[in-house]
Image (cartoon, rainbow, N blue to C red; front, top):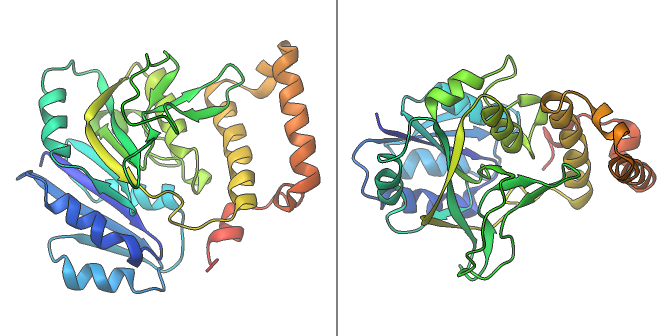
Length: 288
C-alpha cells in the first residue's frame, strides 16, 4: 500500500461528501481511506457507510478528540505514507500525483511533506506549513496572503498543518510516544506542531509541495473562540515543556518572560476554562 488517507469526522455531514469525492477523483491506484467518527449525531457515519463502500470506518461511542482518533486511523492503516485530512478539506487536481513525483526524487530523511492549503474559495493561503516565532508562538506561514505569494520560507517552518499533511510512516513509528503518534493529551489544536517538532528533533526533514494544493473551510468542529483560545494556550505550554526542555527557558529572556506573564494574566481574567483548569475532554467530549 502506497498511501493511507485518514480523516476524522465529528458532525461532518455537511462537508464529508465533498471531501471524499475529491479524494476518489484522484488518480491513485494504491490508496486506502480510513475514517474515524467521533460519535457524530448528524448522520455522518451513516452517510459514509451508505455512499462510500471502499472506506474503512471506525465508530467511537464518544468524542475522543482529533489526536486520539487520528492515532486510531493510523494504527488501522498500512500505507508507506499517511495523509491526514480534515473533513472540510477538498483536494485539488493531481494532489497525489504531484506529491508522488516530488517525493520519489528526494532523500529518505524527508518525513513530512507540506501541501499548499488555500482557503475555501482558493483566493488566499490558509497554510504553507507551521512555524515557531522567537517567542515560540505558532503561526501558519503565508496565512492570508494572495494565492500567488511566493515568499522565502523561514527556517523555523518545521512541518505541515494536519488539516492536510503527508507523513512518512517510518517517521511516525520512530517518534511515536506512549501517548500516540499525535499526543492524545492535546485532544485537538497544536498536536500537529508537537509531532513536527518531535520529527525535527529526531533528524527528519519537511518539504513544501506547492503544486499539491487543496481548499480548507476551517474550524469544521465549530468550537467556540474561548475554547480554542484556552486549548491553544494549554497545548502550547505542554508542547514547549515536552520539546523545549522546560518553560524555564523563558526565565533567561526578559521579553519571553514578559510575554508569558501578560498572556497568563489576561487569560486568567477573561477565560473561565483556564481558571477552572478544565480538561479538554470535559469541555468537548459530549459537547453538541
